[in-house]
Length: 109
Length: 117
Image (cartoon, rainbow over all chains, first blue to last red; front, side):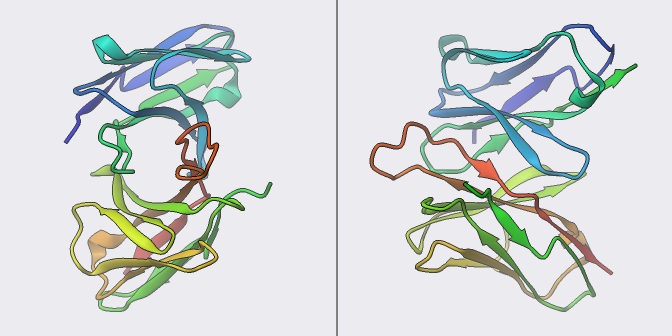
């Protein structure tokens, strides 16, 4: 199946800093989503972005499908941004998301 | 619109028992998927249902099964529970397959945390 690699695995930032999270995938994709998992375990959908660029407030994402990677940008980070960020892809329309191992982000005051 | 709901939120069972988890999708969504999350294996796909038909299944033993009802609500069942089945079980719904659906975005519920003792 398709391989999904996320980097870095862990990240510690001070409030106000910017960060870039990366997701590499091994095959062409039909679906790519970024999620934020909150401390209670719920996966919050951030972006559906199989290609192109999107922005939502302090967050933005870019997927370069031809080079098989996606980037999630967090600007002016806040403590509430802490948690685990997952990239997930669906390569063959089998309706099954393949998740990376996540990036664990801690934003300190 | 209300989001995806899952019941129960927490469950404690003992080895050998069976368990049934329930998921209600976002109103109008007909696609429901289930995932298992463990510290060791991460998030893994279990199965996906659309209009009461299982369309895809992940690499899990036959002890894991599911079904979908005509109102799109879904249940998953795990029989003969093992310690390794302790996990967060997440359900997601998607508007895929609906006429005019713009994306295949999957929306997740809060999960059911299962502990097997």
